[in-house]
View (cartoon, rainbow, N blue to C red):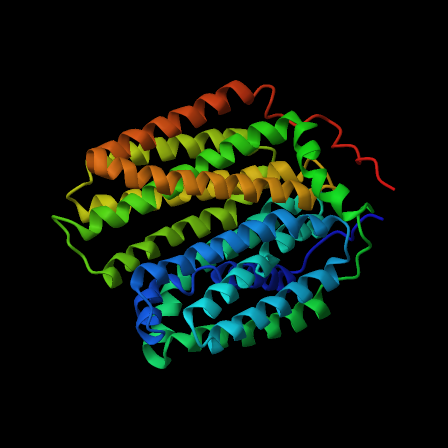
Length: 403
């Protein structure tokens, strides 16, 4: 059964809002670790595990729950996940100890995968002619959630305590569950297969299509580059010559909102058939940003310029990667999104770890050299693939056997 085509502006905005709120659940605790540790009488290093628990839970949710979007009625599935995350948020708000909060954040991470369901669903509902634009808008909602969540969390916690942000987020999740249940049109499952077979099919879906494999390499490289830069930037701004406090460092993230605009408009490039040229241009911009960053170690103005360049470039290529993957298959779109999210997560983890090691070894210079090398690697993959491996075949992935 083919999905209806077209998404209204209201539905697109609702999807973007819900995706942003869902991804924001992963970051509420990050700027509050000191407050939480003091209130629950826990050591600060122990509180640091709160972020790890949320991220591990999210990784499990992406791998074990997101593929269900291909076999379940998403009109029911998305609200159920939102209500489950609301319950986890409420448990966070009421947690009497650090152990209970660790458990609650792990469950929250696992259930706050609504954005990863809504993004491919938006691609289904949009139809071929407008898929890139619609996916770009929803993806921009996700980026906005990532950038804004830490600021919102700090403001709410400063006014009403750290528990208030989790209680408020629970209320918002319930409201969004109701709105989305009423707004999402009835959709028949795109395929039917047992759960073990569904999970096992994620790998074959990727391996059967060369475009998917090459695109995932670009995606992982993009998130590794993004994470490398932002992790190292914190080290740079907190040390000499800047020595900015955490509150000021957080404000630099607002410059990254320029990436949201690239997502809002960049989807049209995919819809017009310019996905691959635009991908190459995005990586050239990222390369230029890292070259500029090499000279920005003592200039706030240059740092802001570099932030804008990198966020526009990497948000653009991330959007185009997703749109290219979603164009490959209707029936396997959620599983392709699972593979994309997993590769992004792995890339981000590698980038963060590399930033810490590189900073100890050679500071900002080592970071910018590595970022430049990653951009050159991505451009090489793009140059080799733009006339072959990155060009989708005329036919989409055929349905996997099922019963």
